[in-house]
Length: 106
Image 1 (tube, rainbow, N blue to C red):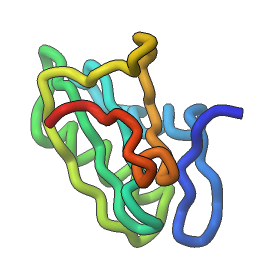
Image 2: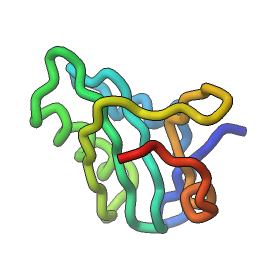
Image 3: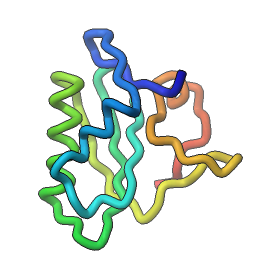
Image 4: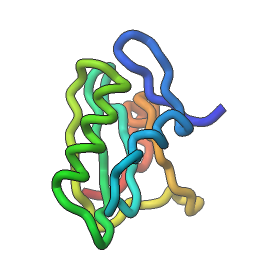
């Protein structure tokens, strides 16, 4: 099973469901969502050519709609680091974030 985010009410939200965050959103090259606590999330977003702040707000609003009342911080970055093996992590679950696993540099 892949990585999942866990909503405050216990629902697990996987990568397939999160793909819907980008419905109607343009100008986003890639994102990574980190669960920092049960109700705090960070979205790292690499803007694409047609990115506007409105697009970033849509991603955050779409994520909030799926998770419920949580704190979501949007962070615009130039790139998202890969794991030591070169893989891209779309989701960094709370357990990985708490364990201090390698996170992209800010």
